[in-house]
Length: 460
Image (cartoon, rainbow, N blue to C red):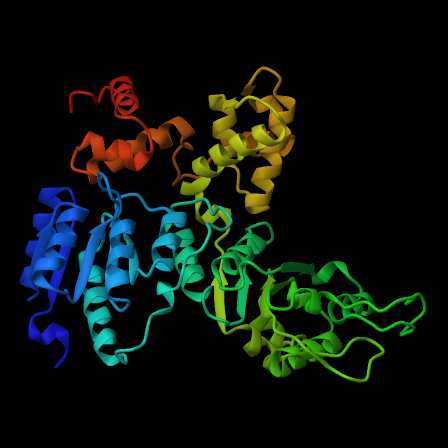
């Protein structure tokens, strides 16, 4: 019989006593035996007294030790422990860190109860189907923090959960998404979180090199292999040996190069240009494209067998227009980072500039946003970015939109209004607990109180 049929034991850990009680009652009605703990110390004490639980659900942010601290402690005791990390503030970096530390899943509040119940039941079922000595991939060492992935939209959190799960494996990963969505950043994150993270990460833009040059760059050549080959060159695959090679815009390579890459993936060996003897390589291959490779396969422009070799795991990056709720976070991050790069003091956005940024469709995605903000930062001499510092096409787009606004859409929100709605949303999610809300937002309680007073919410 499975654990769910034998009254599985769950441990809920949340410093919000009321939230802990309510979720516990829901799960008890599902037939689970539920224990509750209001802190990490209390949870560890419950584990010492009662032995292991079938699964644990822990809040991420709590006073003192966090849910991640508890997760690591539990996994040290039992590498197969099922731990769900719950949080009221979805965060891509936190999701990735939780999964890498061994969490079964990372779930943002307010969670969908039917989905949560289904996830718990599925996890318990899978645990009892797995061999007892199998350690899940997520339990491997998280290592150093990798590239910074900014966002808390559902799409980007799912991306980071996939990255964290696939990174410890040796699987080939295909990263898809429009130009400018950050595919190389995701590839670097996979490499950084893997056991190859201390080795070289070599990135190659396949569309930027002619076929003959690309072959020599990737596989190397021997002296005299062609005109100008005055010395032997190892090639990028051998430079990436024991590390990772990232083949960007893989959809642009020729049929002949596709054939050579297929052999590398199948045989794990390369043949330098002009050489007769192949060379073994130990390289993890990550690839990316903005094109639909399946469609190219149907058109006969891309080898189906190579596609399936590359497409062991696919990570699809959403375009910026599908994750506009991340825009304020990205703007804040880029302005702070760009100011540091240029030796400038942090700058602010005036309301008109905010409105233009929020109303833009961002066809160039995150890369376009970064470029627009860098230009504005350089031009803004008085520490405030105004509409005049933004590209003319953003201003023209706003004028066109104002002349013929879509009938079903309201006016774009300012960054200040988005900040207000986000802060109040977190406050509601924490049942009005200002101390926890301030911790989640990364601000002081006094700052939160000033915000609420400014919005007329201090007495609520």
